[in-house]
Image (tube, rainbow, N blue to C red):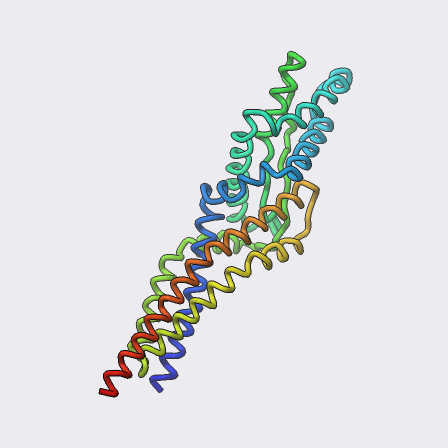
Length: 280
């Protein structure tokens, strides 16, 4: 009976550990603004994304510039040139960082809205880049060029049904989950007849968790590819972000594997030491 109880407690401890580690990663890199900005910032330098971004901004300006027809015709080639050159300008890095900050704020603001049945998984607000283009074109024409009213792009969609905000809140409780996992692991060891063996098995479980995380480099991009896209910017951004998430999860899983192997080693040493004492 003690063996069964110990096994169940150990299994539960590993499940809670896996959930706690996943929540910790999501909270640090997605829910928290600095983590999200750091994760997505390099995408702004991706050549494919820059091409899609500038094409989208130029299209928005051409369609919604609000300029009179003669000025719109005059401004169109300037808009195309400005959007093509904006990614090489000194203000682009700051504008792209502001895009990510605004997008993060808008996306999480939507998370708590239960009235929207299928909001965007991520809303990319390109207003800062559009403002940079407007400033460049306006300087060339000697007049104020209005920024299009809506420069946001919806990336993917998900049926939230009012639960997304609760999920975001639950993710931030990851310290409690990991503390609970530690308590369950201690109970499993206290209940076990062979504590060295139980500790070894707990360590192997942690190694498995780390290995599954390392495999994220493949399954995260594959899962993102199944999400519906809306335009070229959304598709390139989502694909690039998924690649970075998969690589980051895999890299952060290496310490988990190392810790698991250390626990395995402690368990083996402990079991060997107990065996020697019994033999003596």
